[in-house]
Image (cartoon, rainbow, N blue to C red; front, top):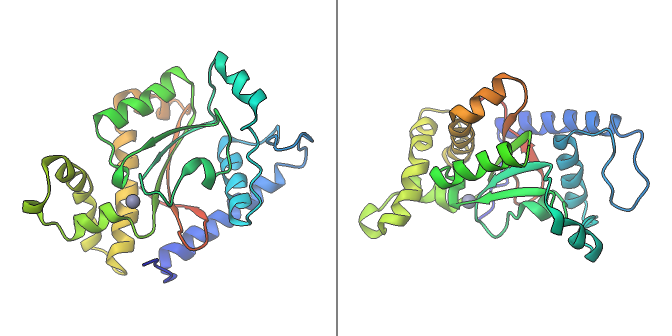
Length: 232
Ligand SMILES: [Zn+2]
């Protein structure tokens, strides 16, 4: 079931989304005129949010999915951002942000769990592909978070248990919060996974140098919107 309850955190996040969007639109006064080309002066975050706005409105442009673009990418990739997202089939980052081939470096694991391989993948994107923005994307109705809220360890394989264990610290955090437990757990988990990335020595140095931003956000199943989460 989709959660359509507009809790306090969503109102706050929605306000931030609108502020960012209005900022992005303001910065886009000198748009390139080619079909689907991103605005020249926009930041990676603004380009993501602009793409999400198209997705919400049902105006996908699939800007860079042409054969010509495919041929161009044979030479290499320069993605504008790395996205850490859940494997949930309802939350495909390339569609959600309306980005074509070669635009997003995507790491997907159930519950957004940042294990060693996921962390290494993000480090690769940052160090070798020179990505300056990492966005950890949680979502409504996340099955991995629900499983961690109601664990039945004796029924899970060690592999599935690893996913649940990766989320569990967020459950502890959420149980101490006011409001909807599942909503709080989902956001706490997204923040937790983002924080795990921030604490990696390689990434931490770049953050301190002002060369890397790691943000947490939530995808709303019903609206299609991505809203940034405040705090850590
Ligand atoms: Zn999920």
